[in-house]
Length: 256
Ligand SMILES: Nc1ncnc2c1ncn2[C@@H]1O[C@H](COP(=O)(O)OP(=O)(O)OP(=O)(O)O)[C@@H](O)[C@H]1O
Ligand SMILES: [Mg+2]
Image (cartoon, protein in one colour):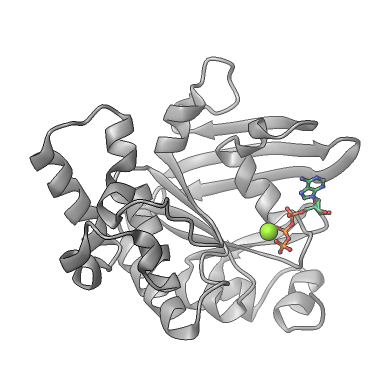
């Protein structure tokens, strides 16, 4: 850990979330450092995605969801009525399990957010697209076909283009919900390498079912169970000497 990992970018306190009358999160207190990767692990249904989606107010798009608690992102109160969700989701980018390119060219996929923000200058767009595709380690594979449909790329390439699309708008935090679980091992490895390269410059929160992935790439790991945060610590502590028995049982494969 380096010093710049000590500053907090996001602090959440007493987070509760209900789907209708069903409480899915029971008071989560969790802080995230300004740089580096935090893994969220836990069995299916433990609330990992629910918590992740609460961070950039994705639940606003669903009916019947109630969120309480505080989410402080730098100086922004995420749930303040004055917080603009379009701007928030630019600052907090999200990558999903299924690569989800738009049915346009690779170039237009990556330029999308910038065009939305009103950038028209071709040289500016060209440069931003190239930079983002290089950051997501897919430039060499797509540079000769930038204006062909992104739907023609492999799943792993599409996922790296999805990451480039998010990076192009210069986010401050990246949320990744099982970004490799739909991919083959080689593509998963490429994504892991990409995330490792980005971790000195970005704060990232990744949900993963893979213990080996969490231990390979994350600095810190948070263990969720039945809508509670059981413990959070440096990844090596969570895997080698967790404080709680439930964590020990999960990381040693006794349930989940
Ligand atoms: N849209 C929804 N409506 C109602 N209940 C939901 C909804 N989404 C999730 N839940 C419930 O909330 C709980 C937490 O689900 P969540 O999807 O956050 O778990 P998860 O840890 O991401 O699981 P997985 O590892 O399977 O992705 C579960 O009981 C789930 O059934
Ligand atoms: Mg999930």
